[in-house]
Length: 295
Image 1 (tube, rainbow, N blue to C red):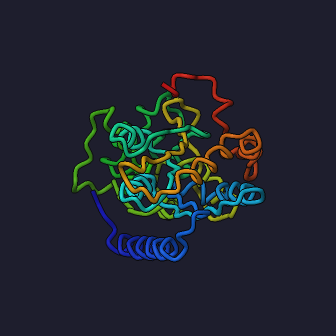
Image 2 (image 1 turned 45 degrees about the horizontal axis):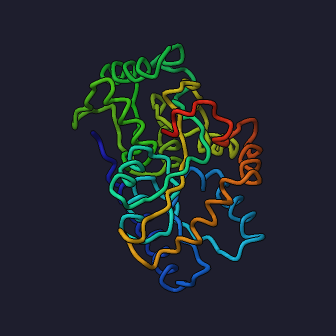
């Protein structure tokens, strides 16, 4: 797998800076009314998180502080005892956290779907595919033939976890020396922009980040080429943490208070009406009709 060294260095600098600022902030403001969260990047990139926090803080005595990072890294901050709660979209990692007793509750709040995006001329010809398996088989075949490139986030985020699960289901292992598969090591926005700069580039994205970039006229040729597949279901969950496993100083009361707001009808209505251009970015889980996801 190719790894862009300059991109990795840039990402590392941003990551270290972000986490350093976050930890300094937490150390300096260790008050009982502060609630510290780690969250996925997509709910920040789209503006949803700031909207919900603003509404919550209008009536609450709690102040929400957060760092937005890939879901894998967000969950690691919980394991390290650096946050009071997590908003994530990496179901397998979330369930692992419950099984380990580090999290004591997982509430699915809202959802959307992943999409496969690529150039408008679609050199891999995925737009007429019937299943996501067919899409990824075509991406591998055309990648090996030099007709397409695939850009993976490569950062243990929820999006990266979903991508890996699709390759795994197909029993496809990408060789380390592959010249068509690139790991960017960056967030969703940066990965999409990198893909946009390659006339043969494809990637998997949450619909929200893609819509935000489209609305900002950042993308020149990236289209949604495959969507509306239940196998690309993308739930977002809030994890409350177990102080007995992590730290007795966790603000569990504050985290639960914010969670109760996120589950409220007021909040669900805000999420339902939150759109960019014609895209509805997130759908309240109360609108989903398949109860098996709660089991």
